[in-house]
Image 1 (tube, rainbow, N blue to C red):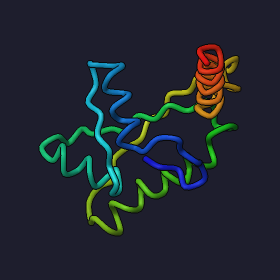
Image 2: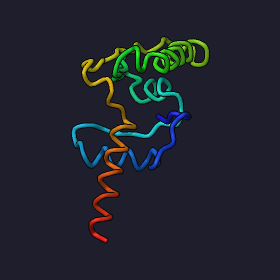
Image 3: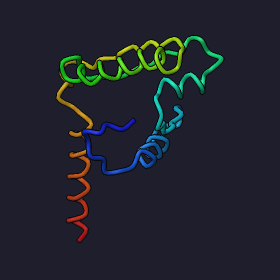
Length: 120
């Protein structure tokens, strides 16, 4: 998905390709519609669809996750006239709550820039 509050250095398609290159045990697809609509269509014959979302903690990510949960709960009911897909949350260890995708991206960017300066 795409968070409108973030600035991305690569497109969703480029991120998907990077994930495909690093992990061959998963299928990565870019979805531009509601994720619940995609899941209902893709796995129509499976009544046991569950969304799993990784979060740092409810304190750090809860506000945004609640918004998505509302969309994924009420969207199917109001728009799709179908049962919502349950969501389960996987929380990280508290000692890692300070680690975010932005932090990782900035570390990688810094290392990339440092390596480019050394080679010039």
